[in-house]
Image (cartoon, rainbow, N blue to C red; front, top):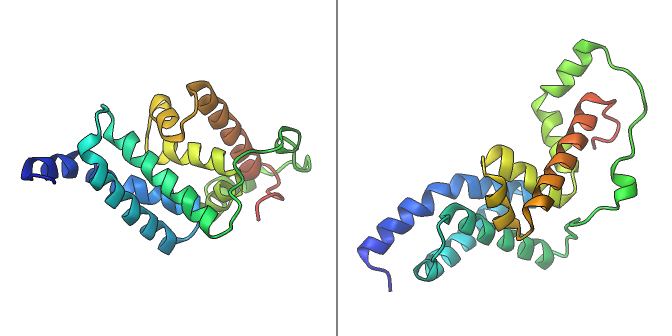
Length: 176
């Protein structure tokens, strides 16, 4: 069982990342209640397994548990997490209508448009953007959380950013 020192280390090393965990879960599950439940479940799992944690990066370890819990929630609800994307369709451009600079600026800085654009990304790209831009994780940490090579993280991040730019500055026709 946990001793007082272990509990203090767990609080210091893991619980300080609960906000990042919730943000990740919220974006992956697209439901606040599901996100809260997933983070709670993941935190309990992390607590139970903390004694066996031997890594250096508790944040990446914890967020990997959160990610896996979210994927299990999606599977249990019979939602299909779009984990891979057909490369031929992913880069299709929206209509080539030019926006006035003021229109482009308004669209780019509209929080609701940003949220819809991020939600429109395939799950793997969305996950990578959230971990990099909101959780401020390094590529190596993201690779650890998503259990993919760093090159895959870099590729997903570049594609996600490109697609977000298309959705936000383009004609926006693809944003639901």
